Length: 498
Image 1 (cartoon, helix red, strand yellow):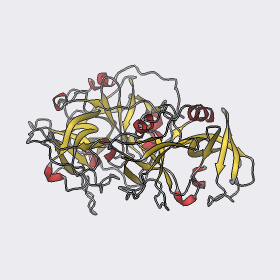
Image 2 (image 1 turned 45 degrees about the vertical axis):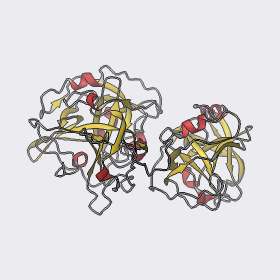
Image 3 (image 1 turned 180 degrees about the horizontal axis):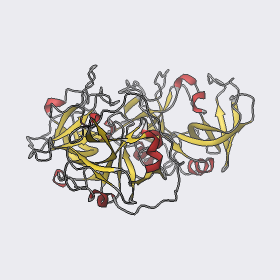
Image 4 (image 1 turned 90 degrees about the vertical axis):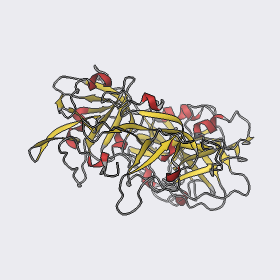
C-alpha cells in the first residue's frame, strides 16, 4: 500500500487515466434548490449491473436516470473532483472535472444524474461513473467536463437527512458490486493502532502525500482497516485520537489489479469530526482524552435544554467550526457561534477577548458548563476558570442552509430545544432587499418574497457606518429570536452580502 500514489487524486483507471488539469475549471450552476421536474427510473444498484467485467469501459447509451443524496464531496480536501451519492440500494462515486463542488452539491442535497453518454468502469475494483476519453491512444475515465455538468447532474432539494449505515467489518464486501462500496458507513468499537496514535491524520510536509492510518478492534485484533487521508485534507495536521469508539467514512477497496487475490478495505474520511474515539481503549488502557463521556453533537446538546437553565454534570465534549466573526464586532465580546456536522449551532460564551476566525475548528469539554437561555438564544456558558482552547484546524468551510425569510421566522419561533429550530445555524437568503437606515447601524428590514425580518447590526460593529446596500442581494448570516419577541438576522461582515 505504501506504493500507491494518490489513489483518489491521480485517479488512474485500468491502463491509463489522464491527469487532471491544474487550471481552474468552472461549470454551469445547477438549478436552485427545490423540487425539480425529473424522476429517477433506475436505482444506483441497478446501474451497477451495466458494468460486470473488470477493466471494461461501459458507455451508457440508454436514458438512465438515477437519484441519490450527496454523502461526501470535496469540502474538506480529502476528496478531489469527486461526489459520492447514495440511495437505499447502494452508492456511487462520480468524477466531476470542477472545483468547489460542495458549493453547489453540499452534503444532504438530492441530485438526479442523467447517465446517458456517461461511462461506468472500476478503479481498483471501486465502481466509478465518469466521462470516457482517449489519452495517448488509450481509453481512460475522466471527470464530467465542467461545461457538461448541468447536462448530467441536476440539483434537487437541500438538507435531506444523511446518516451513516452502521455495519460490521463482515458486511463490507470486496466484490465490485457490493452495496457498501462508496457508501457512508459507520463502524463501532474501533481504535487507531498503537503505532499510529502519535501521528497526525495526514502528511503535513511539503510533499502532502496520501497516507494510511490503521484501525482495529484493539486487544490484539488481527482485523485491520486502512483509514486513508490526503495531505491536502484540511484536517491533515490534527493529531489522531487515542481512544476507542465509532468512525464514519466512505468505504472503498483497493485491489492492485483485477486478478489480484489481495484486497484492502479502506475508509476515506469526510472530516475528523466523523471520528468519535472518545472512550477507553480496548483492554482498559487509559484514554488521554479527558472526556470519558464521549463526544456529543450540538443538536444533542441543544436537546438537553428543557426550558430551565441547567449545569452540565456529565463528562462530554462538543466540537465544531466557528461561524461568527469576532473581528467585525457584530457579536458580544467573549462569545462565538459554533456549528457542527449535525447542522446545529450554539453560542459559546468563553469570556475575555477572543481572536478566533471564521473557519477555526474547536473542541470544548462541557463538564460543569451551563446551558442557558440568554436573551432568547441558547448559550453554552463556560465554567469559571476554564480557558479558551486552541484551534485544531483553520479554514474549515460551513455551507449555509438556503432558506426563505418565512422559513427562518417559523423555525426560530419554535422552542430552543426543538430539532427544527435552526437558530444560529449559518443560513443564506437569496434575492432579499434591505431597507430602513442609510447605513447598516441598528435595526433595518430585510425582505424577500416570503416575508421580512429585522436586519440588525450593532452600533459598535466595524462596518456599522457603511452604506446599506440597495437592490436584491444574497445575504448570509445568523438568525435568532431576540428576547423571544424580536426575530433578527445578523450578518457577520459586509462580505456576507453579495
